[in-house]
Length: 617
Image 1 (cartoon, one colour):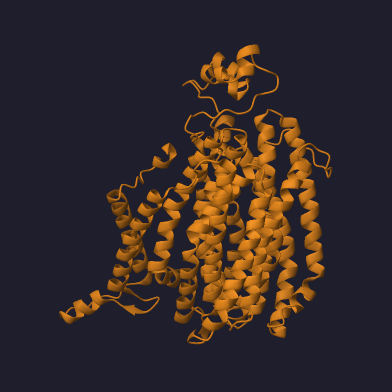
Image 2 (cartoon, one colour):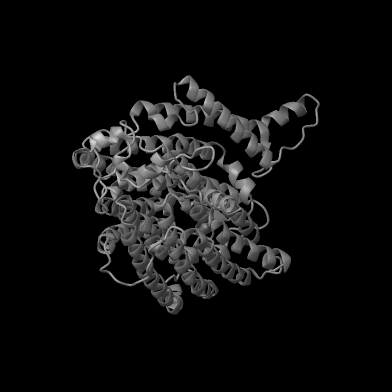
């Protein structure tokens, strides 16, 4: 019974351990396996022992040697693609819950004044979440913590984890307290908002700042579990945060009827309380999986613990990099506040869809590769370049088709997810245009995550930080130059200024990606890109599939947005009575057609899209 419970816990946590010894049918390891498990990794097999000079000469050392990759092509452990799949699965479930949350919010709050304040209130403390959140802590902690584990220094790793938690907690809760007291002055800075909107903004900030502190501590848990190759639970934990919001929307918005009664501001505050409760649940669910791996954990605030200063030195540039990106999002929201009403909401809903493939594919691959790249920091540059190339190919194979799908049938997707209640057809059209502008830069944004992880693994955190500054400045410059001219044009009561901000973000994303590629090439001195021929095959296949989906969209028509398909008109002209095609059916049908055509086009162009094919590249 105990053993089955333990196996269930491992399956739930998504633990991936390529070094775990195989078991005999009886479940017991052989004596040879038990003896080899205690040796350094480089000394287990005869082949790797001969490649380690110190071990072949003097036998196994007390101090383990540097890790040796298992393959000669640089692909590393076979667990890396599986780890990326576990991360992607967790993120996918979290995003599904997020879409359910946004679908309710769009129908209850729409694209208007209250939703604008909500989106802005989430964005302001999100700067702190990004500074102390999963991307920053993972990039600074995992290389240090994973290297300690690889060297067999579990006691030092436990002390490092305790010191990191203590320092993160002080920083997160100290900032949260400052944010609570400064909520009103912060709200007064947004003079473009009405007085009622500023009061609502201050109320929401007082709840969101402590929520972000809880999420920062949850990010610490994610970094620890990822280092132990337990990927799933940390990335599925945000489902509970979304459930907290959904519960508040259902109880107060639908059950008590606050949305119908015009109490949308009260509903927004109630939902913020749900978000705070969800943040606490997100942290709590990871605790049972942390206890088994933190064997020598000691909570402290000491900066003298081994590895802390190194992590802090890496943390500062990473904070700059992540903070600039988050600050850029806050700048976009502040600029959108200068535009016609609904611009902030349109950016918010479009970004939900835009971030989905980045999280599912770009972040999942980068998160799975970071621990492995960190373990191979001192390996040959060809090994690192091969891992980066394989990661980029996996990312682009999934992200480029997603961008094409958004451009072709994004209006069906937006209409199916969001339209209804206070979210009308004009809102659907505006969010679709913003999503299309974001989709242009989608491959670059996802690829930059992978390239940044390579720099973090090489302990070069300054380069991504500097290039993120370039991205923010360029995004703001291009966005400002486009948003005011486009704001002159509208869709009913809504204006197109938000499209200009999204176009600026895409232009800046491609610039950052190009600069990261160039700098990483200088560092490795070996080719590491996806290859022009490979990229061309993916682009051609995605374009063909997008054209087929767009044609099917015009043929079927839809309810959201309202469109009469030419197939229905043809049936009616022949004397038939065509049935109306629902937006959900149209979206599902066109997406399915897109997938089938993409696979056929990929096969025709010689692109190998079979499961596991990229693991061998």
